Every structure is written in C-alpha cells, then in structure tokens.
Image (cartoon, rainbow, N blue to C red):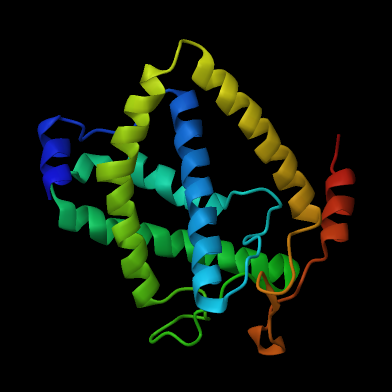
Length: 216
C-alpha cells in the first residue's frame, strides 16, 4: 500500500502520451524478459526442468510484454483506485492470453500452456486462478515496476535508451520472424492439441507462401 500511496501522491495517474517511444519499447522489453524469467523459473521449480519457455528463441515472452505495457498505458489513469486496476488488469490479461492461445492453436495446433486442471477454465487457455495472478501482476507493473523503470530510463545519458531499445527491438523482430515460421517447441515447451479442439491448423510453410504471394 505504501507504493500505491506514493504513486498516487506523485500524480502519475495519466498514461498515454507521457512516455516516449523508446520508453514504451523499454517497458515492453523488460516485461517480456521478466515474463520469460518467471516462466522458466516456475517450470524449473514445479517440474525440475530448465527449458526455454515460449514460442521464441530469445529470452522474452511477448505476451507479458504486451500485457505489461498495456496495463501501464491503459490502467495508470485508475491508479487512485487499486481494486479497479486489479480487476481491469485481470480482465485485460485474460483477454490477451485467450486471444494468443486461440491464435497459436489455430496456426500451429500446439499449446504452450494448459490450464485444463484448473477450476472454471475455458478451453484450458484461461482460468480464474491465473486471471487473479495476472491481475496482481498488472498492479505490480503499474505501481512498482513502471515508475522505477522510467526513473532509471530517464537517468541514462541522452541517446542511450533509443540506441539500446533500437538494437534490442531489431533482435526481437528478427527472432519473431524466424519463430513465426519455426516456433520454439519440445519437451516442457509445447504439446500437440487434442483433435477435439476442432481447429484447422495452418502450417507455417503456408503462411510463408501466402505472404510471398501477396500483391506487391
């Protein structure tokens, strides 16, 4: 609660328009990397295996980057009401996770996570327990992580942040393109979806062919 009160008193209750493009890219990259560390650490703790989690080759999970950045941009305006931030954060994260899960199932026929054992889950892609956990994560992003990260970004020498973010985003974009056609899979990473999911899988090779045949 101390962090919440400090945040509210500082007046940081507006979001969109306060941050530069480099700062938003920095937040996205940090949240993506933090999500990767969380997933890898959790899998190591629960299953005793050290694996590269996520669809990409590098140490980042874009679903966490998108969720964290959007929570800062969209929910900071409600910072004076922590329960609202928590509830909206849970809904926002759940929507992102469900959309991403459906996309991955449709394109690859694989699951990178499965909540089938959790109560009240929907298609094994979302569930109330994980929604609550992500709501807490959004609160942490709004009240703790983002303010500290932004202070750190703004202490860097002029031009340093745009250069670092530009290089890292170029690596991220390259990884994203490669992983779209050849996603990271294997033991402890992804599992084949059962046939009853009823989704028509689009092979990555077909995606490449469709992109090549787009009108120039």
